[in-house]
Image 1 (cartoon, one colour):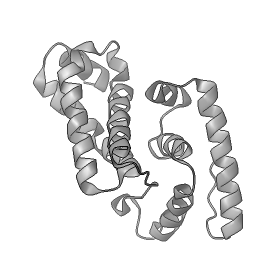
Image 2: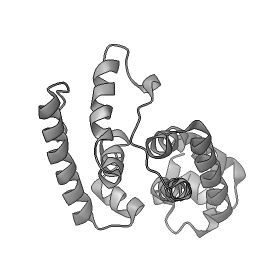
Image 3: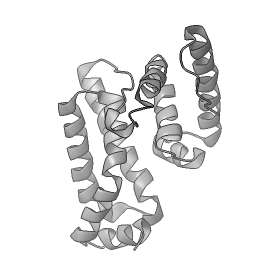
Length: 175
C-alpha cells in the first residue's frame, strides 16, 4: 500500500494507517526540523506538535497524494513558530548519521557553506537537494509560486558558487 492509499485511510480515521504514514516520513521531518531549529528539544517539540496537529486535522487533507507535502508544511510552520518565540535563526546543520564515513568531511564542508545562506535560501536548498522535493512540491510546502522557488534556487546556487570558490574547499556540483 502506498502513502496515498494510507493517507486516504488515515483521513477516514484509521489510526494504524496514520502511524504508518508518520513512520514513512519521520526521517524527512527530523532532517527538516534539525535544519531549522537545531536544538534537540526544539526538534522534538516541533515534531511532536506537527504529528499532533496532523493527527487532529488529517480529516481536512484534501488530496491524500500530497500528505508528505502537507505534513512538511505543518512542520515548517511549527519550526518558524519556535524561531519566532526565541527571536533567533539557526543555520542548517547536518546529521552525521546520514553521511558515509568517507564523505563525512565533504558533507560537513558543504553544509557549512549552506549555513552561510539566508534562512529562505537554506530552506529551499534543503528541500530540493536533501529532501529531493520537486519545485512544485516546494511551492506547495512553502506556499509560494513555482517561479519564486526557481528564482530562489538560482540565487542559492549563485551564492553557493561564490562561497565555494571563495573558500576553495568544497567541490560539489549543485545544479
